[in-house]
Length: 479
Ligand code: BYC
Image (cartoon, rainbow, N blue to C red; front, side):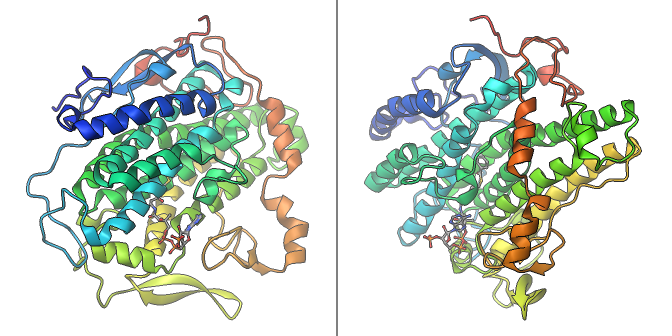
């Protein structure tokens, strides 16, 4: 087990003390980060004790330590997974070469772009979620929100470390820019679409952590394959934290579905699409959950970029961004003559067309993502089925509600049937949350801060965090 050094101002396992220039750059950046956290981090509970997990060592086991912490005092720092001995570039033109410990000059711009895009998403999500603490359905959920937030803050540190250590002056400038852009800002928005959308309520939060954090998982896995070893080691460590975020999303949606089914059953409602009757019970009806799912899945698909992308091909050839689980794929890891089926619009129909596998890497990663997303559907539909209801949550077709890639200029139903603008405008409220749906959900978002209590619209979790009992005070409300 490799322990993190907490004796210094910036906790780290990268021997920060031996690099005076980097230490100075990070110490210069730190107060700006803290200012950003105060201004755009959680809008409430900054001075409360929160039962948080902090990384204390970076080995396989026991890296997490739980204790009460006030968020601004969280130990943000720089942690890399241990170096793998004799690691080699696993794909592309440099396959078999020893991995790089410094940025290869010819790939500097491309690498910096990947790190900046990744870095930009982290503070963006904290900004998107900053008001949710005021309406948390329980102390358990409040604590989970804050755990996610502080870890996204740490992921920003992870990317800033790479920028400041390996990219010189322009890296330092990019690090400052990461604190300057703002989610949803008209003049200075975050870089990727989904990170400028609102996260107005807790159902959106659970959808975001299920679907959008899962894009994070896929992208981090691909970057963890990088031949630039510091990026690989950073992403490997981030992935250990990311798992909890998706757990929050998956169990959050499960608990919402569970509560809705229980309430419908207790009230003798047999038709889950009788929205008015279901809503009168103070729970979120399944059709509205489906609409939110449509929204967040389609927004997250956009994060994979265009189906056919020379950027993706170049990054792979260069050995700086691989495929999901690259080392476990049984092929030449060069993709010189390989093809991959890509969904495209052909004569007004969605069809599979073989494209060079190299340029189809975004599509491939998106397919891996869709497979991963489908697991949640199985779990949630099991809950509905066990409650005796004939209703299935489904992922919409990839052509539905897209802003990036092949389908950005067309309209399609969730089933993938192409429709004209007039039909889309008339029917989109059937498929995506309307403002009335938003108002209804907002009406349920009243905070619950008594220990062991939960809002009307969500079931308690099956187990507590760190095996704590049901009435555990995850956030101390009296300051
Ligand atoms: N919005 O060849 P293209 C996470 C731009 S989430 C706006 O189609 P490429 C997290 C693109 O930048 C994971 N612009 O795509 C989750 C390019 O612009 P330039 C974040 C977009 O480059 C929850 C142009 O379109 N990490 O960690 O192959 C909470 C053509 O690009 C979008 C990463 O994304 C968009 N959606 O792939 C917290 C990994 N899509 O350069 C955190 C790093 C594309 O021509 N990023 N564009 O001006 C990448 O690997 C790639 O940049 C992308 C795009 C996958 C994003």
